Image 1 (cartoon, rainbow, N blue to C red):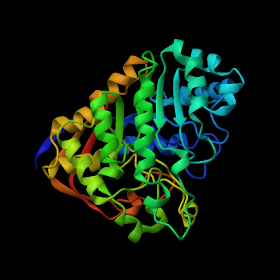
Image 2: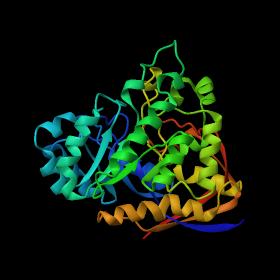
Image 3: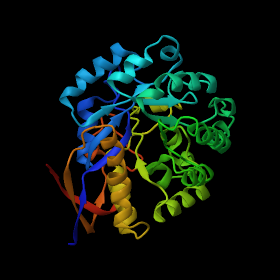
Length: 351
C-alpha cells in the first residue's frame, strides 16, 4: 500500500438536469456522484427545461441551490435574453454565462452578431463567460450516412476558437473560457492566446474508434476526435499546457442513448481517470492538482464562489474496477464501466 493525498476536486462543467429532467439526474444524485468521485465543487450548465436564461428562472434555480452551496450556476446567453433586456438584471444577480456558438442540446446556438450584442450588454459586470466553440455553419445533422467527424468536423472548432480569441481582445473586462476543447489545433491556439480553457477527460482517454464499439453511447459534442488529436492533448496535459480538465457530465439515460443524442456522464470518473494517468506515469501529481483544483479554484474565487475543502486518500498500488453497481449517477451507465483503474481512492475527507 502506498497512500498519497490530493485536494478535493472541482469540476467546472456539469449538467445536473434540474429543472425538468429528474429522470436523468437531480441535484441530489448528481452531487452524490461528484462527491463519491472526489469532486466537491461544480458549476451546473443552463440548458435545462426550461432553460436558465431569464431572471425568474435564475432566481428559481438559485433558490434550489441554497441546499447545495457548492453547486454553482451558469445562465445561458440566448437570442431571447439578448433581445428582451434581461441580461442586465441577470448579470447583477449572477454574472456567469454559457454561450452555445452552435446547437448542442436544443436550439441555443447564437450568431456572431447576437454574441457581440450580448457581450456589449454584460461587459460592465466583468462576467465569466464559457463558450461552446463550434461554427454552426460547418455542422451537419447526425445520420447513418456520415461519421461523427464528418458531422462535427475539427474545422468547426478551430475556426470558432480563432474567432473567439480575436473577439476576446475587444472585451478585456470579460473572462473568456473555451470549454471542452477537443482538437490539438485549437489547444495550441488557446495555449498561445493565454485565454482560460479546458479539456474533457473523455477527449484525453477516448478517440473516434470508441464510436465503433460503443455506438451512440460514445457520441458527444464536440465528438471524440482522431487518435492523433487525443495523443497530442495528452502530451499538452503532460507538459503543463492544459490549464483545467472537466467532465461535461451529461447524464442521458440508456433509453435516451438509443438515439444519437449527444453526451455522456463522467463527473464520478473525472478524478480517478486523471489519477490513473498519474499512476501510469503519463502526468505528474502536480498536473493533477493544478487541473482539478488549483486553476479551477482561482476562477471560482475570482467570482466569490464557494469552494468545498477536503482531501482524497489515494492508494497508488491498488486497483479499482468500476462496476455498474458503483455508478452513482441516475443515468446508470459509464464509458468506463468495467475498466480497471490504476490506483484506488480509499477515503474522502470533507472539511
